[in-house]
Image (cartoon, rainbow, N blue to C red; front, side, top):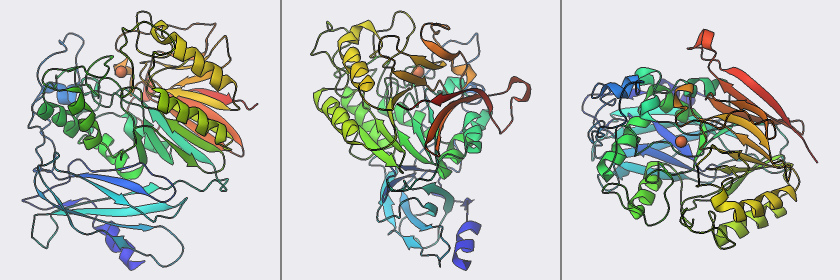
Length: 466
Ligand SMILES: [Fe+2]
């Protein structure tokens, strides 16, 4: 236990000279026995939040959505990093450590370190340290924790969070970033899924070069609440249009100087994702999640609809159906960057609930309706909702954007034929599965206690079983 106390007491230190760890750490792609740790070495202990007013104030009602992203808001710095980690158990601690791993300018000073041979269903604590190349003493350290997925035989309760759509322009808490990240900790999730639009290259300040795009990521995860949440929660990151390239994009397009291939490479560089852009993870006896990839394989939005027009691509679609049919998890959640049920706001043509992808949308809704206890969780849309497809009965849970400020671009309004719940506000959605029962809850800020670390529940929906 003494060694554990030593680990904790070293948390979040920094010494003059650097390298520092101003972006914290993100722990991604966690399954029963492995995880990927994302670490970036920085030249300063925090971002230069004073560079532009929008960094701490967000975009005001009268401000124009323009201006360029400063590429040097939080420069990287070469160095070395190391991870020490251990499972929290009743037995004597067994601290494991990695080698000191060099980090340099090749890839924005990011290290992605795989952790393997982890125990299922365990809480891990860790300490990440940085040091200058070739030196012995550490110059910075951060510590946190994460959970590994329980085995399919493990019937413990599972809680997870889904959110979407956050931007520099919707910052609500100054250098602390998005208040929702503090409130999400109060939900005490086992894991977190971001369905995409984690940054917006094409919204103020605009990022039209690879350097500017990297700077946007560097800033987003230097905000206090955003960084501290990810230090302590296992996370999965999915991409959508604005963090791939530009609004409603498809393969082959460009944005400013950023090519499609550079957009894909940037995303893999800036989040712990590994090789698979679509994947399924089992979380204990009752929960399995599927996270789909909606940009890499899609047809042009403008192509005529028909059996060959696709968002998922043939290979991913076959994988999705095959693995859902094979699953014996009680609750199956398809987490998608864009809606399958909707309804969407008028004039969109980018997802399975739109007319432009009607054929594949129908195919997916029919398939989901033919399976037991499959629920769709979607991001992308800037409102919170629970809808039921009038034709098939498929239930879709729209998590909504990161905060109320992010209700950009309108919404369809409450549609009684579809909606069991509708709110034009933001926040996050939490799913709880316990004792074989599942519920979805939508949270946000209480207007009377706007800075409360505890979120206000807007709606609870029991998820029925067949
Ligand atoms: Fe969005």
